[in-house]
Length: 285
Image 1 (cartoon, rainbow, N blue to C red):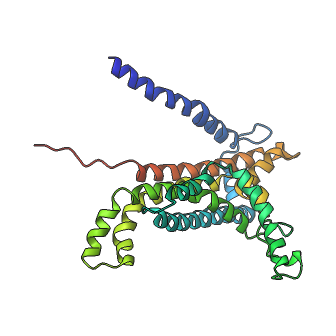
Image 2 (cartoon, one colour; image 1 turned 60 degrees about the vertical axis):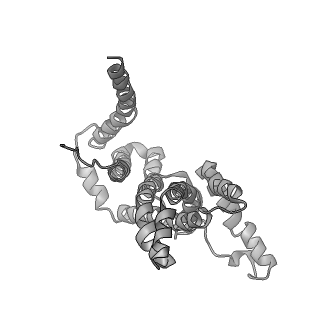
Image 3 (cartoon, rainbow, N blue to C red; image 1 turned 90 degrees about the vertical axis):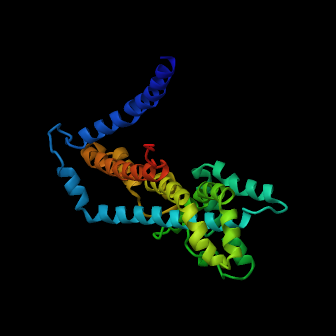
């Protein structure tokens, strides 16, 4: 009984946490999105209005692009760096430390670093000017504060790469060397080994960690606000909540917030599909 009671408590505590701090606020948010400021029930009309709005579609597309490109760039960097430092060599501990160090830096601090580095008056523009690569500081490319979102993407990718890379590196150092050595003795080249042996083995780690990074970027507020010119869904929702005319648009703000939640919930389901080991079935003998 003690073991059963301990197991029940272990399940009840996180379940209660989710119910109180996630599902209850989500239910209230969905409820509030179905009423206007006069407490009149309007159902899903605001959802239809928001989804059919061209401005929403542009904002949604921009949010998707920033999240997707930053995750893809982080995956590419994580795989390349993990492949480079997986072996045994002098200075490996230092390399691992430098690779992991960025994971402990807050996203807001990384965004501030991007500002100092990439603003037209920042370090990189000053360096380019001193080297004679540009005639004026204003000639430096607009990386942060532009409509492309390149600064946001670079900031997220810089932050996500160690998180994805550590997952990939743990797989590379555990199982792949033996299989690669066997394949090499059979005459398989480096690219073929990576494609047919390494990539299938690290794919689950890449997919599960990438889903987390994508979901974080999709719902992020502070980094796109500092480094981008266009608004993401999170910024749009926050601005509606904080607007002096916010009471007139609360239903719309709730709808945007709920759309972000629905997308991240869908990604959470996909994450657990890849992260939880699948059952092999029970033996009947």
